[in-house]
Length: 197
Image (cartoon, rainbow, N blue to C red; front, side, top):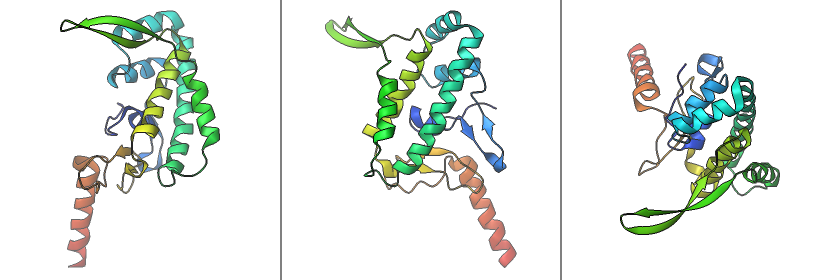
């Protein structure tokens, strides 16, 4: 199955790479190739960087990185499900683990010219599996430092387990997708009213 991009944030889309429609687990990061494709589609990795990584790591290496990413995803999902309703609790073990991943990131600064002005920008070096995992950790870190935890929600759809970031003005979004889960809920409510009448 194709990965879904309904979360509104790369870290949430990462959490949504595993979901349970009708109680059966769907895994969209089953191997290293699928993981690389997800990183490209999530705009976290360029196609050229993915090709270089594939050459450097090989199939086995990529599969091992994908397995580590799945473990990080499951750990993060558990953490976010506890953090979003209770952000003031003590999350020191989670912070230690995330910081451990972030320490593995490799950056360098580069001077570039944009529209006649010089800028010093940070560039990520993505040359190893650790670099990729640090990239994911950066997105998770951005989520927990930049977003309101009360707006990180699970879909209210009957059999849906997807996450999303509610960026609506009134913050009353209930469904991962209005056209899928939202529509199913409307149809179910309509049928229930018809039966009751």
